[in-house]
Length: 205
Image 1 (cartoon, rainbow, N blue to C red):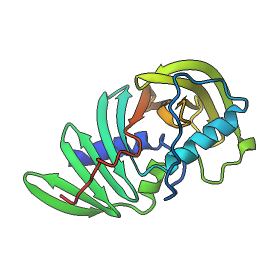
Image 2: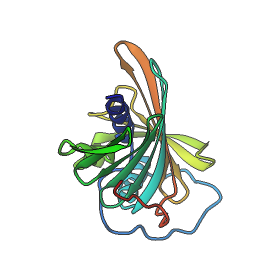
Image 3: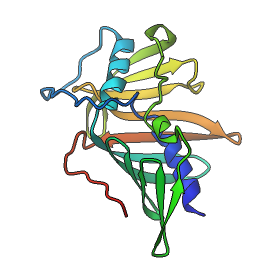
Image 4: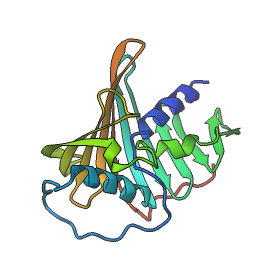
C-alpha cells in the first residue's frame, strides 16, 4: 500500500519532536519579541523538550529532502490522536489503531506498540544532562519567528546531531536532522505551530 511508506517517513520525522509526554498543561508564558542566549544550553534544550511533551495539541510540517522529496503535515491532540496529511490524503491514528482511508473505505490496522511514543521522543527519557552536548549557534529565525538555534548531540543521535530552534516561550519551533540512506544524504526538517490550540480536533473517520 502506498500509504504505509509515507507513514513510515512521517514517523521518522516525528522522532525529532519533543521529549516525553505529560498530561500537565503548559503554564502560560508572556510573549517576547526576541530570544536571549542561554546561560546553560543543555538545560535550555532539555527544558524545551519537556515543555513540548506537555502540550495538549500542536501542528507540524515535515519536509524531507534527499533521494525522495516528501512533504507531510501532522496534527496532534493529547493524549493519543494523530492526523497525517500526505499526498495520499489524510490518515488518522487514535490510540493503537491506524484508520487507513482508501477508495472510500476505512480499514483499521493495529499500530506497533511503542511506535507512537517514539514519534514524540527524539531524546531518550532517561537522558542525563551530562550525556548531552549542546552548542549555542546564536539567534536565528524559524517558523516565521525569532528563535535561538542549538546543535544537539548525544550518544544515540545521528553523527551530525540535531539542530533545535527554541523560541522565546521556551518551545522548539523547528528541529532538523541530516543523515544518509543507502549512501545518499537526506535532510528532514520539522516545523511546529499551533501550540495548545483548542480548535484542533481529531475525530474517528
